[in-house]
Image 1 (cartoon, one colour):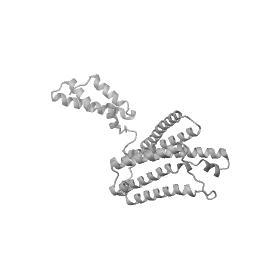
Image 2 (cartoon, helix red, strand yellow):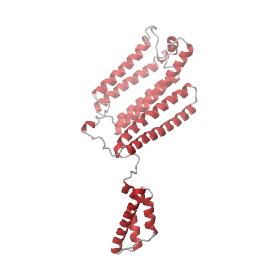
Image 3 (tube, one colour):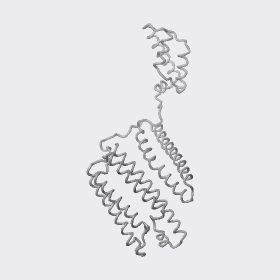
Image 4 (cartoon, helix red, strand yellow):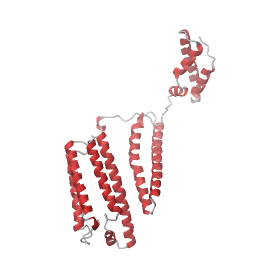
Length: 316
């Protein structure tokens, strides 16, 4: 039997026993030494030199802390397989919703208090980054606690009833009908607003600015027609192809450009609308500012989402 006195084995055993509970250390240390000795003896008997055999055995055993964890059944992960998918799905959902809502709210607040574009961008970026860090940390911490305190309970049994529904591509008959109905309602609303108005007590009071007519309003109606043609093409194709995704992106950019341009020039909203339905001039001005900011951010967010969703469906 080979006697091991080299410091490599002593160092390995010492490193492995650092994380072993006191009540198990003596037994596991003796077991580990015996295992190393047997493995070294086997290599020496096959013709290897003692030093080389010891190095090879310790190398094969690997990281001593990992070996000790396997002896003591200690978990070396934050979120194990029992909760991993639940954690990952929830985290993705939260990261899609919470930072966007926070950024949207901060942008609106900064705009209403008169901050410059640079200040708005800086504040939005800082808050968004902070929210992402906090959401990731606290969500993960909750699942770490669940993993560590959950005992040995078995995960819920999966069944075919848990299968998700097939994701819609937006190319079905119902989606086509919904899109065409929505565009028809939008067209009707623009024309109704111009000639009749939506306030029964104020006939002819339009929400949109009169200066939209004829050319800006006509451009908007043309975009409605192009959007309807896109919906028909999508239905006939059966799915979002890359050319259709590009067409959708172009339409989204055109819609966004038209609405933001008219909004920025003061053409989109009728300045007399809120002044008429709200008695106080100060209140009317505040509401007008709030509505303007919300429309601007809503148009921007919707357009970006529409473009991203089109390319996501095309490449899925």
